[in-house]
Image (tube, rainbow, N blue to C red; front, top):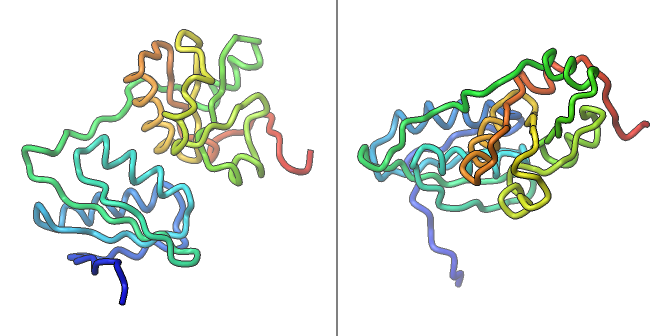
Length: 195
């Protein structure tokens, strides 16, 4: 006999093998196709999807129910909220390009580069001066950052960094910028495991 209740799922979404931002993109489409109160199961292998889904649910008003890990697969459960519970999805409006960030760093500007990707992503390649606080740990580690410092937030494509910028702004950080298109567009100096 098991104590684990059977989870009633209305739609299963296979995002195994996909990296950010694709699990979020597919989840947005899936949520639009179900009725309020129905549950979507998102199956993903990207470890960063946990923080991505939690952040997306928090920013949109849909209910993150939880995650079950089965081997290398993360099964995320999201309940679609009623129309009066859903928040309009907004993007963090203060952005800069990777080229603009590279120019500021080359000019010696005092700017903290915050990489919110998972530790493995960061280890294999990151902006030379970046510090790593994964999105899923940001709220717990926010004290490691100065709220009045200039902070450029970067991830792989701009999705997680967008959520991180909103979180920082909500916590009183006043000089935060989302770097687009993220590491996929970074051509400046990097550090990695081999250096």
